[in-house]
Image 1 (cartoon, rainbow, N blue to C red):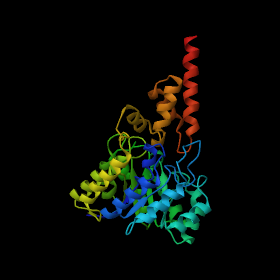
Image 2 (image 1 turned 90 degrees about the horizontal axis):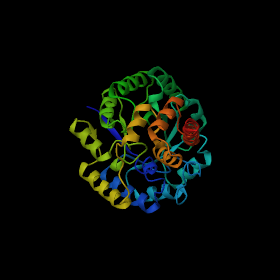
Image 3 (image 1 turned 45 degrees about the vertical axis):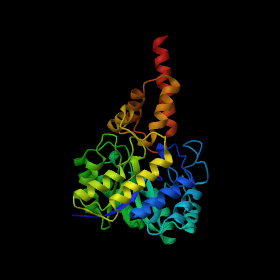
Length: 339
């Protein structure tokens, strides 16, 4: 049985579900509850990480550093972490986070572009942070490629490799193959971050652990991009049921879920709806679920057709403009066919 380091990503990835509108009050109270429950690492910030608060993606109601500071001030035992995608986030963002108490920096890139993280991983290490190499959209790269990218991250100084299955596209055997390849390629731990578009998040987690993953991500109420992440409450229960060691207390996690749920009510919880299923099937980044719905309604087109177009185009995180481009193209094609 495995000893698991549990990373709750509600207050970062969950911001996608909440249209990036988390406030310091929501963050502080949720972080306090997660800390009391014994969660190891609490990730906080804009859904797209440091520097993600933009017109292009969605603005937070207050500076993201305020949210991060609120979490750091609220916890007593847990470590607070952030996500940074080079290009969105810069060195100064890391420095500000260190100043307010952040101790974990997860430096992210698309699954085939680890070389973009070199400077930021080294900077985070220089600041004394526990630094993670984070590969987004692991389902868009094969096992061999992920192993090669993981070796780069290890050489840059990453403390562990996190494979983010951002589309909820993979089935357990595919997750196992990728985790196995990365575990064999590096000497540092491996983590796994699933999404639930095909209802496989916890099954994929168990498959990842069977292949040696020891860091696991999940979020309260399943808040996250697409159909959401693995649900922290269910994930902790499943891990304990399977005999794995998790420091988090299940009763405390259920209490934290109640705190968070009350804070965001009556906002709807993530569900595996038709659009989310299609995004998982077509391997489309989960953070696009709201832009897809909005663009489909704006241009009077089928979300299903739009998602399939985006999948064929192989869009990656950070290409929000592609959603509108493809929606406009579909609308024009329909108009032309009707003329």
